[in-house]
Amino acid sequence: MTMPQYIPIMLNCEGWRIVIVGGGRVAERKVSSLLEGKAEIVVISYKLTPWLKSRHTEGVISWFERGYIEGDLEGARLVFATTDQVAVNEAVIMEATALRIPVNHAGDGERGSFITPSMIRRGKLIIAVSTSGAGPRIARSLCHEIDKQYGDEYETYIDFISNVRAFIKELVPDGSQRQSLFKLLAEMDILTEIREGNFLPWSEEEITSWISEYREV
Ligand SMILES: C[C@@]1(CC(=O)O)c2cc3[nH]c(cc4nc(cc5[nH]c(cc(n2)[C@H]1CCC(=O)O)[C@@](C)(CC(=O)O)[C@@H]5CCC(=O)O)C(CC(=O)O)=C4CCC(=O)O)c(CCC(=O)O)c3CC(=O)O
Ligand SMILES: NC(=O)C1=CN([C@@H]2O[C@H](COP(=O)(O)OP(=O)(O)OC[C@H]3O[C@@H](n4cnc5c(N)ncnc54)[C@H](O)[C@@H]3O)[C@@H](O)[C@H]2O)C=CC1
Image (cartoon, rainbow, N blue to C red):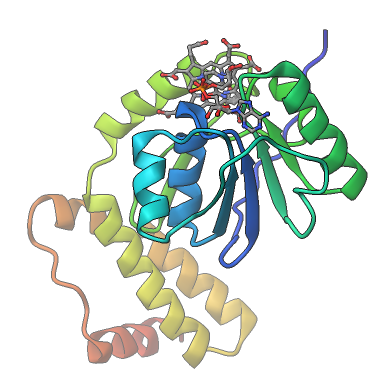
């Protein structure tokens, strides 16, 4: 049996209509991460977990309180088949495939066109781990290991990098000058400063003077 060679992508699904068929524990996990991405969530399921029900009561997700029927995927840009019914999940895969909508099959990963990794976030930093479906629990425990090694200092660090890069992009039109500044920036040991409590976010003046000092080099 050969497994697919999955390709990771970082999806901006803000405002996308995403249909989740099934309202159980697995659906809950998928919905909670899709809400972070500000997607427009539609759940089709006889039942919802208490957490999903609360989101529906708050008006954060839509809920069709019934079983899946063909036609439910019309207008969706992403689909998740998460029911405990093999035949229903299969029907969802068939419709999504016919409509060429990327689809996740929670009960048999390879039947779908994409799978979801385990992940940790530190602000803008995302570390995602996948075993290509070989062992989801292994992906999760690896993430727990990584979680212990990468603390909140990474959020501060990546925010700093993001901020300085934005100034470089605005102030330095020359490609090779930009590249050397990006490189210098990445080589600075800001993380140690943050860990030792010695880091103060740079002001606009500090950033622009750092840029003019080093762009000549
Ligand atoms: C292929 C994939 C499809 C997809 O869902 O996208 C898939 C498939 C399946 N999972 C199964 C079981 C479990 N999955 C988990 C947990 C997670 N599963 C996740 C992803 C994926 N699971 C995708 C591959 C990811 C990869 O390998 O990289 C995580 C990482 C992320 C997420 O859910 O978004 C999330 C951890 C979240 C976190 O980080 O905390 C647990 C543990 C638990 O629930 O506590 C169990 C029970 C224990 C066990 O079985 O090991 C079964 C058997 C079902 C059955 O019994 O029939 C299948 C079916 C199959 O094998 O294809
Ligand atoms: N990918 C993953 O991480 C995991 C996947 N699984 C697989 O996912 C399946 C679902 O797991 P859970 O969420 O824990 O099950 P669950 O039993 O909590 O939820 C199943 C949901 O499917 C809904 N449903 C049933 N028939 C339906 C229909 N015709 N139309 C719409 N909704 C329907 C039910 O109302 C219920 O909300 C499992 O059967 C298993 O195969 C299980 C564990 C983890």
